[in-house]
Image 1 (cartoon, rainbow, N blue to C red):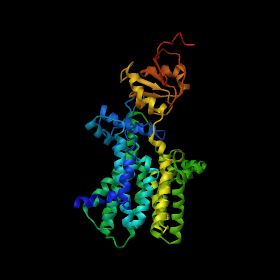
Image 2 (cartoon, rainbow, N blue to C red):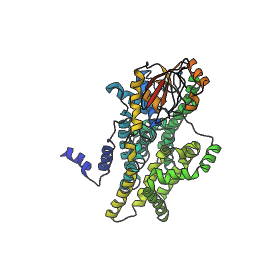
Image 3 (cartoon, helix red, strand yellow):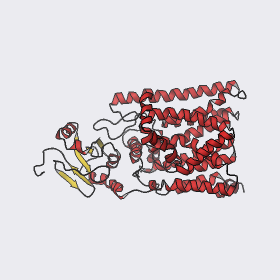
Image 4 (tube, rainbow, N blue to C red):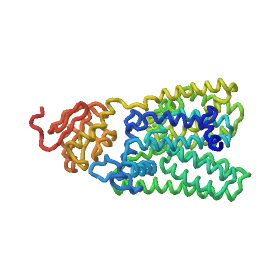
Length: 480
């Protein structure tokens, strides 16, 4: 009987557990697909590169390496590679597969979503917690919660850690909660720095007279340790790796003045990240309704959360500059706050039937706008054969250059190290000669996706509908 009581929420449509599990199962569709969907395959293959190199080259978590640094080691400064390392640990047990990162992110994000529900239920109400969590499940998080990217992974860890931090401060619970707060929040912020903005929600509690001064001091002290450890990694260790190993890759933002100008110059696209990308149009409409309703009803708690978190997130927006309006995943950390306010907006519908219809409409629009992320195009899938083609003519340690511009995805599927370049560069003999002096042995021309066809004056050693592979050396006398 006790067992059936525990699993009962899994079959209750009014239980958020049912919906978390349901949307988790839906996102298992195509979970084993390689990271080749259109949206940010390059970002996913960067993560996968690092994980695979932990397995095949060196498993020191402090020295992540990627494959596009040419003849260099590939070691570079990047976000703390906890997510990548979990993929590596799973690979140690089962052997490496592309999709482990998808599964890890899906599990962690689903757990984080449940903690999101618990925080809102404790801080506001059961109804608001259900509405907000449901909206979060069908928001941008629906697709990004199963990508091989650390964004929702990081936020989920911070949200879970925040639950334990609130328990320590508000519920007067002890050491276990304090320890879990420290570990989870530190792991989350190290995994993706922007997630740290969420900690502003604790600021009002530090002025609450009902919380003992001793608890506040301990909490602030441990929070300071989290901030210090994060600062040492991002502003100490990362620059050291870049300087020591001579390869810069991770984007650390712009100066505030420049970032503010870039946001202003791209203001329509920046605003679009909020009303189009995060919750999509109907969800955003309820977000606006939620703000208006909170003002009319004098819901100070909700408004304080919104103002504080938006102020904290705005620092990240400005630091990101041009990148924010041009990359959809930059809005991911703020989506839970928007879901909270939108859930409040939906909550003004007193009729349960109509409220359910409103949530269903938000879900339909949200999922339909992300369904393309669950399919791999035919041209993109051609990259799955690149490694085998290269293996037929070369060794894994041969250095190559690929005509994919700044896109690292083909290099990941080539399972080689080397350089990325554009066609224009590859047609310059001096450029190719300079790479040869560094050890270049093959040129890969992607003909349809990630690159376009180009004729080069070198011996052609392999050609098919998707790729051409040249071996530079002497000029091919047959080339015209």
